[in-house]
Length: 352
Image (cartoon, rainbow, N blue to C red; front, side):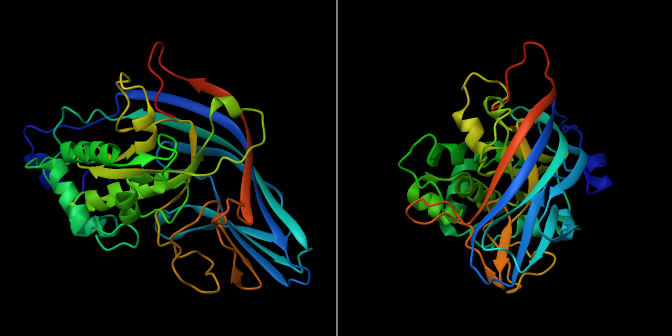
C-alpha cells in the first residue's frame, strides 16, 4: 500500500517516490527450538503458541518444516497479517522439559531509505492506519510528556519524512539502550513512560517511546519483533534473545524500518546508519496487544512476549526472567548457517 490515494500522488509537485538506495541479501539455513521447562508432574495439558519466520517486508521463507514436536501441531496465521504461529497441544506431558523444533530457509534483504533530504507525499488517508495511529495503546501512550518531547523534536517541521528522522534522533538523544549504558534496565515491560523515567532501557522501551512520539505527530508507526543472527554466532547453538524495531509510514516510501538501538550504536560515519534495517535478523511477528489465535485461556490481549506464549493446565507461563536474573520458563535457542550473502562491493555494513 504505497499510495493510499491517487489524489495525493497527483497533487504533489515537489515530492517524489522514495526508494531504498541500498540493497543487500543474506540467506540462512535456520533451526529454531523452543524449550519449556519445569513442567509439574501430573500436568494434563500444555499449549504453546510459537512465532515462526514467514514472508514479510524484506523477508522470504523459502522452506519450513517442523522437525520435532511432542504433540499435535498446526500453523495458524494471526489476524491482520501479524505473523504465523505454530500452535502445539501436548496431552499428559512428561514432567520436566519439552521442546519444539522447526527448520527453515530464510532470505533477508537489508535496506536503507534516504530520508534526510527528501520530501514525502503531502497526505495519506488516516482511516487506513487506525491501529498504527492509536495514541492510547498500552505502554505506548502519547501522554503530555510524550507530546511535549515530540513537539520539541519536530518544531515547525510539517513534512512527515523529516519529522520521522527528527523523532528517531530525539529518542537516541534522550534514551540509551543498556548495551550502551549498562546502568539502564535490561528487561522490563517495554514502556514509553518507563523509557522517559529511566532515560533508556531495553529495545522495546526505546521503540515504544518512538511509536508514542510518532503517533503524537500523526505518523503511523508499528512495532516489529524477531531476533538477530550475527556472523560470529554462525554454526553454534545459542539463545538469540529477541530484538524489536519499528516501521513508520512515509507517503511515497511506504513502511520504513529503523532499529534505533543498532543505529545509535553504529559508527557515526556510516552513511546508512539511520532509516535502515540489516539482513542480520529474522522477523517473527508484528505489534503488541496481541490476541492470539487459537485463543488463550484468559482471552486477554498480550503485551509482552519474548519467544512465544505457553500455558500449563490453562495457566499462563510468565514470559519474563525472574527479578534475580533467572531465565524464564520458556526459552528459545537457534542454530544457523549462512548459505549466501550478497552486498555491494565496498559498501559500509548496515548497522546490525
